Amino acid sequence: MHEPPKVPLARVLVNMPRMMVNPIKRFNRYLGEYGRDFILSVGGSRRTHFTVNADVIQHVLQKNHKNYHKSAIQTDELARYLGRGLLTNNGQPWLTQRRLIQPGFHRQRLEALVSEMQAVINTSCKGLNQTAEENGRIHLQEVTRDIVFRVITRAIFTDGFDDAETRKLKKTLDAIQRYVVYPVRMPFLLKPLQWLGIEGRKLALTQDVRKRVQERIDARRAGVPKDDLLQMLLDSRYEDDGQPMPDQQLVDEIIILFAAGHETSANALAWTIWLLLRHPETLAKARAEITEVEGEGAINFDNARQLIYLTQVIEESMRLYPPAWITDRVALGPDKAGGFDIQQGTSIGIFFYGLHRNPEYWEDPEAFRPERMTPEAKKARHPFCFLPFGGGPRLCIGNHFAMLEMQLILARLLKDYNFELPAKADLVKQKAYITLHMDRPLSLRLSRRAANLPSAKRV
Ligand code: HEM
Image 1 (cartoon, protein in one colour):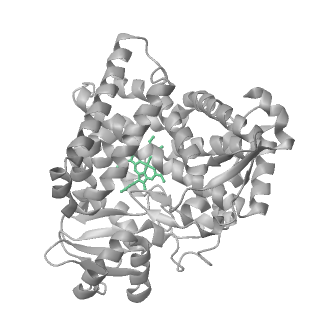
Image 2: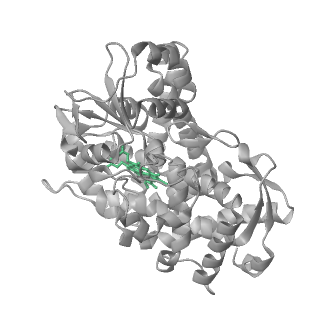
């Protein structure tokens, strides 16, 4: 049996509280001591083969993916709050849903959504313009979360949710997502949370969201068809029996799209802006490209492809701060991966954050260098050493959507505004919730860019 080194149980137990507070730091420490693969196991509970080894990861996510399922934490536990949709499903039910939903996310289908995205960005910028005129401050993460939430809401329901309703929905979903991390990461808290009635209150919130989504579905059925994600889900038919998706499944999938598709992109945007502001030359180059590509009009579906440098910036930002910083799989049967034996039932902890900073694949890994994301440089690297959207058949279904919305939002914000970093901006660190956040709110002073004042008329 060839297995990676094992972290002694006593060490795991002693470090447990630190692990809860700052798992990334603890994992990095172990990687430094034990190498790119190591085993963590706590008593009788499941053993985890923890890895930042691209060969092992490619094997598990792609080459022999059929032997691996997501763990109960990512499926059953999360499904209690978010429902049983693509993200929280496994096996045949997952595959059936994936086949049904995939066509709706093809890049070409997104074209119809660009004008909706632009309309949302315009509305959001109205509020920012006022702050900018007064040279006021914004809370960066709130701004990116707000825009992204509106974008995903409009992409799903082009005719639904007015401003007040969108805010209410966001507040409810945010509360659920903030809460979920406790029972999911620390299952021993579940009972106390139930006794205190907190769990029940959060579950009631999810019922409320479900009810509101169902109302929208009913309203659409009674009204006119639209060109949005809801319509795509309503019109899709299962291959085998030609039936539409049952309503309960439809509601689950919609809630999953909200959950998977808003915090991730919002965090990626916030990290990208923070990195750009700390690298003025990169920022200047990105702005020059935006101006050139945009010409007299605005960024649209076709010319967004020409934002080549900006795309590299976003990718390099997601290398350093991958919004999905970890995932897992459980081996259904014994296997061999990257030369290691994998016992049946072993969890594989795929640590994207560590993979993206593994010096075997990245020279000077801590440095922010968008130049490393050129197609030539990518081709020269291991195909599984950069996985912001995961890999294999469970690759993020919203990857093109996310890239497009981030390009549109960044193009607009960088072109229209100057952001001033506070003095202590360098101290920002990551904080690992379900997605990778900043550890503090970032307050930026905002002003209009003089070079861009004419475009104010557009808003
Ligand atoms: C920067 C933004 C995003 C990042 C970094 C991201 C990252 C990821 C990753 C890493 C996975 C794979 C997880 C695994 O294999 O365990 C995933 C899956 C998924 N993502 Fe995203 N995502 C983003 C945006 C979106 C958006 C905008 C949507 C929807 C509109 C979305 C919907 C999903 C869904 C439904 C899955 C599950 C797919 C499946 O298992 O078949 N994501 N995402």
